[in-house]
Figure (cartoon, rainbow, N blue to C red):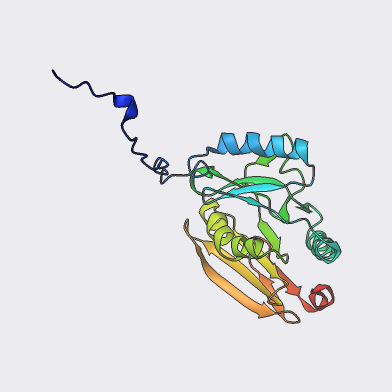
Amino acid sequence: MATLTNRATQPVEHVPWKAPPIQEESAVSVLTQEGFEELARLGERVDESLRLEFISGKIGEKALPDGDHGRIIAWLTRLCIQADTSWWLYPDQGLRVEKYRKGNARPDGCLVPLDAFVGQGEWASADGVLMVVEVTSGDSDTGQRDRVEKPRAYAETGIPVYLLIDRTLSEVKVHSQPDGERYEMVATVPFGKTVTLPEPVGMELDTEPLKNWVH
C-alpha cells in the first residue's frame, strides 16, 4: 500500500522577505517644473514661511531672513535706486532659471527696471534682470546652493551679474560675463573693500557697511 504524505505536517521553510530593489531615480529627480510649482503653492498654504526652490533637479528650502539679512537688502536697494531711479531691487521674486528655464529660484534680490515684473506671476521670466543678489544665511545647505549651484543656474539663464554677499566668509563675490554655462569673471573682495558691479549695473560698491551686519 502506498503511503500518503500529509503535506500539512511537513516543516515549512521560511524565506526571509526582501524589499524590492530601489529605483535609481528618486521621485525628486523626475519632478517636472510644473509639478514643483504646484508643490510650492501647496506648501505655502500649509506654512506661509515655507519658501522652496528647484535647482539642479533638487528641491531646497530657502532660509528665512534675519534682521541683518533684511538690513543688507535695504542698504543695497537704496544704493541701486540712487544709481538709477528707474530701477528697483525686488526681494524674493521667483524666477525661472537654468537651461530651458526648467529650474525655480528665489533670489534675495532681483535688480530690474521698475515695471519688469508687471503682469507676471509668482515665477517670472528672467528676461530683463540686470543683477541677482544672494545673501548667505547660517544654513549650510543654503550656502552650498548660493556658492555652487546658483552661479551655474544664473549663468545658464544669462543673467549679466550675480552678486553674492557671503556673511560666513565675510566677502563679496561679483560674477559676470555668463557664457551659457558659467560666469567667466569672478571678482572676490573682503568686506571693507570697494568692488565694481559691471555693466549693465555699472556702479562701484563700497562694502565697508557690511562689517556691521556679519553674524
